[in-house]
Image (cartoon, rainbow, N blue to C red; front, top):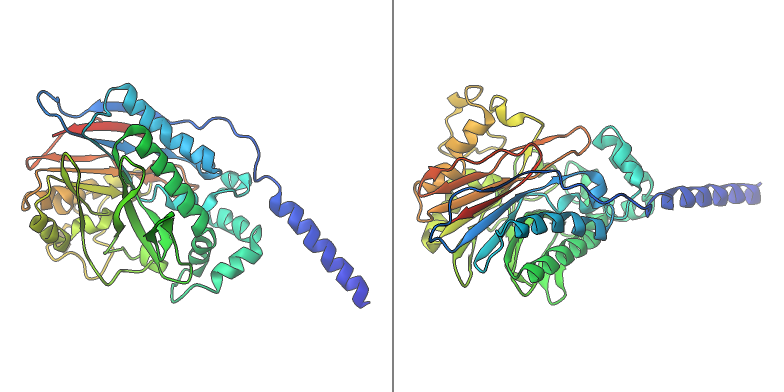
Length: 377
C-alpha cells in the first residue's frame, strides 16, 4: 500500500513537472511597439540639450524572455534615433514599473491568455510551487504575501535582465538613461552590476545608467509609496533625493508619488539641478479623466485641499499638486514625467507626459498607446 502510494505520488510530481515546464520557451512573433506619436515638443533652435521621454506600451508577452524584453525596449530607442532625437547631450527617461513586470520572465506563455491578474498569478504560483514556497518564507509583515513571494522568487532574474537591457542600450546610444523603476528586495549596486538580498524588504527603485553601461550612484528609492504599494513594498527610513551631475547637465530623479510631496523638492532646491525627471504610472484605462478620489496615503501631502476630492479630474490633480506645482517654487527650470502604458489583464493604464519649461506646461501631442517625445532645453 505504501509502495503504491509512493508510486502514485511520484507519477503526480512527474506530470506536474511536465505541465510546469510546458509552454515556457515557445517561439513568439516580433513584439509590436504600438508607436502612434513621435514629437519634438519644442523647437531646438540654439538649444543643445534634450530629454527623450519614452512612453512604452507593454503587454505580458513582452516580458517572457530576456531577448524579447530587450528587443521591445530597443524598438523605442531606435525610433527616437531615426528621428534624430539622440544626440551628444541626451538623457532618456523611461516610466515607473517598466521593470517590475519582469516577474513573468521565462514563465508559461499561457499567462498572457488569462482574463485577470489573479488568474495569471494563480497559474504562475502553481507552476513554480517549490520556488514560490522558498520566496514565501522570506516574506515579512506584508499584507500581500503572494505578490511579495513572487517578486522575491524572481528577483535575481528580474535584476539581471533589467540591468543587462539598460546597460547595453546606454552603451549603444552613448547616453544617460533613467531606467524607469523596478520592485526588488534589498537592491544594491555591486561590482557585478545590480544585486538583491531576498530576505530584505521590497522597494520600488530606479537607476541611472551612464554611457559606459554602468549604474551611476546608488538605488533611487520611492520614499512615499501609496496605500496599494504598501501592501507589499516598504517605505524607506531615509528619504533622500539623488541628483546626478552629467557632463552637460545636472538632474534630480523623483519617482512618481514622491513628486506630490514638498520635502523631496526642498532637497532638490538645495542641489540646484537643471531638471527634474519623474518616472510615473497611472492605473486604469481612461482614469486620468475620471474624478480624483483624493490622495491614497496618510498623511497626504500637506498642501492638498481635500475639498478638491471629486471636483478635479485625476489629470487636473496631477497639474495642481504634482510636478508642475513644485517646479514653480524650486530652482530647476525643466521637468518631464512619463507614464507606463500597456495591457496587463484587467488592470489598464493611463497617462500622458507632463513637460514643464520655465514654469510653463508645454502642449504635448497625446499618444493612444506608445509615444516618444523630445524636450529641448
